[in-house]
Image 1 (cartoon, rainbow, N blue to C red):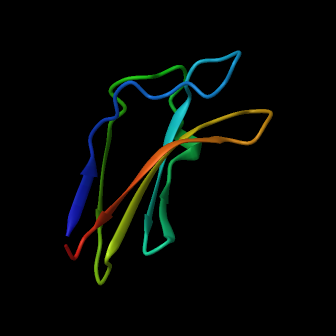
Image 2 (tube, rainbow, N blue to C red):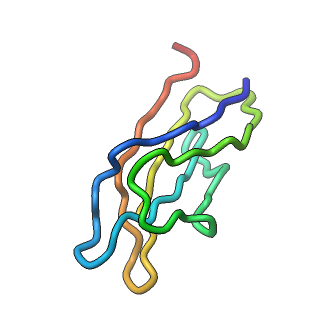
Image 3 (tube, rainbow, N blue to C red):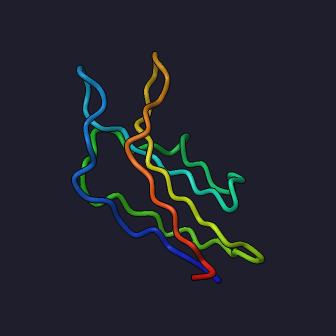
Length: 87
């Protein structure tokens, strides 16, 4: 199976003094397979697009996490979803 994360809209703001600086993490069965922290998008709240195909085999749980990058403090989780690939 291959998947593409195409976009996120209206991401929640997590920092007081700056805009959203989102990046994505993908976990399969709680194991991180994609981490785009180095490629965060500065001050972006809409239309975040990732077109990186990833082959998934022998898995049942796909977790997509959206994070807000922060240079000084720790990054903040914006949100996540879990997709049951067997269902």
